[in-house]
Length: 497
Image (cartoon, rainbow, N blue to C red; front, side, top):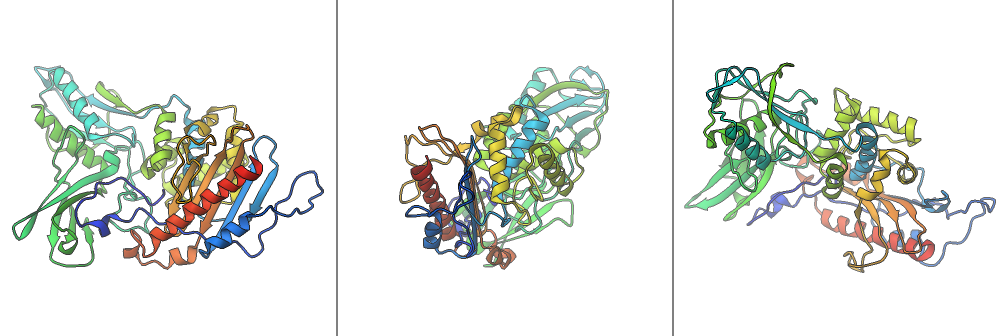
């Protein structure tokens, strides 16, 4: 998904946590064309019973639908409609980002987070500064920092004579990916060269007497460091659900008491990710008996001595998780690292230009995750990308193997276990936008490349900001979108597979 993130939900905070980004399906364009075969002079043929246009009309969801399916080996167009219409790709854009990152960074690339010392370690004390240097790792977690600190403890580290610095300058510092999202949604995080816990803080509340006990921490599975960077107050009101203020040094939140029930939790974004990671590191260090002063932003010296490091997984595995869980932060970070651009818009344009030049694919993306609703692609461009990856000589050939199997679906839209047909693909949802791109791999061996997009952009654009986390009717749109996609794939397996 594009408008998606991972959280924990409890109690009666359902309205706060329901906004996974809703999808819309749409009816067929009035001028969609019947499919044509190559080699028959462009003669139109009659689609078989239960054709795609009939399935789309039956869905009756309004807006626009485009679809295209081709024989991957020959490029023969088997079926298509609305192919000239450019629509928001949502998180299917991450497939393009993965293609780009694999080729630009290579399959052996890893993000590295380092701890440096500017002076020697004498009697447990660094004679100088200690520096937490971020390499941009979008998957860095608190438990990894906790283990890093423990290893520093085994070196005998107990303190510093100078400063504790954090350097997050490897990547641009951005407070959010997309400016059109509610403050509280974790799928729209900040990013920098130093990221932690997908740049989210854990907010937990529990009823106590007439009020609530609330905590904000940077927890992992084994460590639970408290943070002071963000704080929460419960306000006696029904709406708005959250308010956010960063006019001072602390990120101040309030939450409506009417939404809290007896207790619960959720992840909230932080907008100063480098400071957040450094604060968590300092708390973990204190638990190991390592005393550090308050963190300060600074640049790592070129001659700093490396004491230890944390490495991410190799790029293909990192991208596999990005595609499976649709993590926007990972997409933006790998795209920015691959382009070397100083900002998100410039980085997206650099990727667009590169894909057009080296892969012959024409995309108009405004970011690397698909979260920005202004991005536009055609089904033809995305199918061409899928074909290009299948026949690539370079690292992009790994893309089909790291896509998640969408699977064949039953009448309720649930994946059928053990089905012989595989559908490695990437889904995408924004509010009233849905997409699916990938391959159909039947036992016959005839691989199909396809793309499906549906969007009601007018309805999406009309949403008030406060409705964008969980828009009215959004869940029904998601369900109908996914069912239509499943029925189209089912049709193509039956007719062309």
